[in-house]
Amino acid sequence: MYWKFPHKARKKISAELHEVIPLETKSLTPVAAFKNFSIFVDKYAVQYPFLKRFKAVRNIGYFTYLEYPAEIQRIIYSTNWVERLNRDYKRVLKMRGAMPSAESVIALMGAVAIEKENGTYSYPVSVFREVEELKRKE
Image 1 (cartoon, one colour):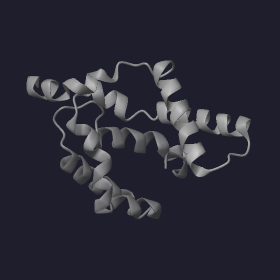
Image 2: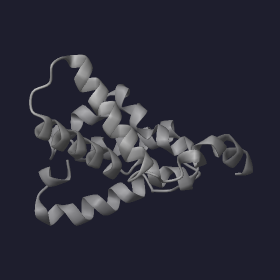
Image 3: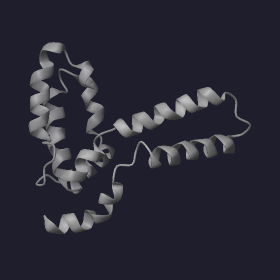
Image 4: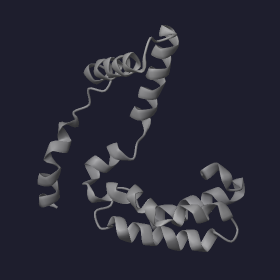
């Protein structure tokens, strides 16, 4: 989405968007964040019509990460892990070539995911188990 704005306007729009939805905040609920974002969209929809589609109510789900503590929010809104896993899937499928069935592809993807979980992605995701505890402390 960012690349669709003119280069001269990017800095201003980025700063305003950071004010609308501050990162790692405890005070903003998903509903309030969506309302702020809708106001932002209304303001710029005349100049940039592609923004109108982001105002759909179904997009409120994108703001649910705000219900988690700041430590978890950092992990959730980063897609680096997902992008890296997709790249690993593509690499393995390219090396294997043809697969005999859809089930074998699923089994191979599961094996790749398990391998990456034990090695590359060994970040302590056990932090998520204590989410309710962290929420209570806040």
